[in-house]
Length: 511
Image 1 (cartoon, rainbow, N blue to C red):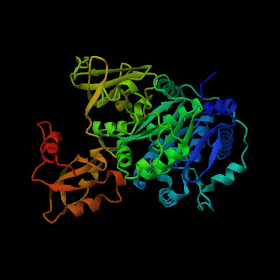
Image 2 (image 1 turned 90 degrees about the vertical axis):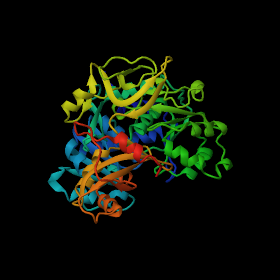
Image 3 (image 1 turned 60 degrees about the horizontal axis):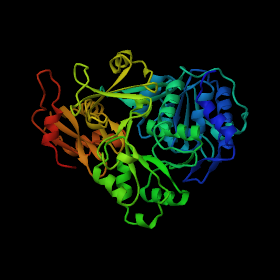
Image 4 (image 1 turned 120 degrees about the horizontal axis):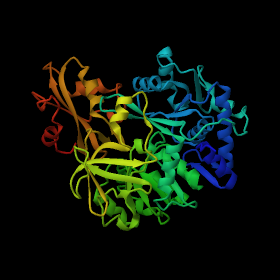
């Protein structure tokens, strides 16, 4: 029998039909596993009626909510492939993704109608055949109404032979060339990721999980699936607000969750946080970028354990995690390899580094991606003899604890979002007044890191404001440089590669 991720919801609904599955903290919608599964089945049959076939791509331009979850499992049930879209991207960025994956259908939220309209106007350039809008009122003229179509569809389980090595989802992560890469995961790799996490962390069926990260991130998508696999209740935050997070923790008796450092920093700075009862919180995972040790200790002082976690889209989420007993003793470490996961640190020759010596992090496990969509060379470069080459630099101590040091690929992590300098550099270089540019990450108290442009002018009249204005509208807001400086020349090595280390030293002051 094939393993289909869609069946995870079906089976949970069979075993715990009346248990609460998810709660939308904004709208107040509360669904049991039985209700969620029925809605998912209706969505699946709606997609089939709209011509979606096994292997077709269904893109989700949705904020966190029941509609995202039920659409995800519905797509899985019929053997189609989910493409979660980052709704922070602009139309040109989404156009590339939709064209690259060949999306057949897009399900979008009403708040993104203007963005969807821009995409529809691209016509044959993206080739989408069907648009479905999740909205409270009438849908756009070019789209079908999600709720109306769902009500008219059968609640019976769809019968499609799919699973195991069939593709489940494609999640796009920007590449160092500036073009996003579609990371391919199958039903098998997604199931392996869930089993890996459940075998490692103290996750329980009676937990109340705070789902605050956007579901277009693997750091939210895999935990969401794990919650359903375990029968855990998820409290969904469509939009993060630090004060509201404390309110939800008290009201819903949150016990676990995953937050990025920027979220944790915002929350600990809330003056009235002491007014809220957080005694039910057992642990919180922190991922996407290193969390300052001082922040870990601040949470420890108020009785909340924060455990560092390290993962990638390419691993389906799990790579390393620190356990409760080592959270403070090894503060600063991202922990040891997950169960069912191997991690090693290698030098430039591919040989394992001695303890304490920096090298590239390599990961092996059944949860590793299938590859990159339409990128055979990138896939071959990333997957070597069963090991994923992460491009991250770290050390490992004698006990197997990993300490992330840097990113080989110069990626900037701003507020938990991956930002690649090359993409920003390409936009800035399109300005006629720019001769050369390098984008680096600068320390930001608010976001952890923020992009910063170092520019060589070709026109003396070019100003910092001109550079920043040129980027606005061409890049998602989290990718926009937060400042710019002008230099006579960009430092490069003999092979022409930018010496970003030199620039980071020169512009080391926090923004």
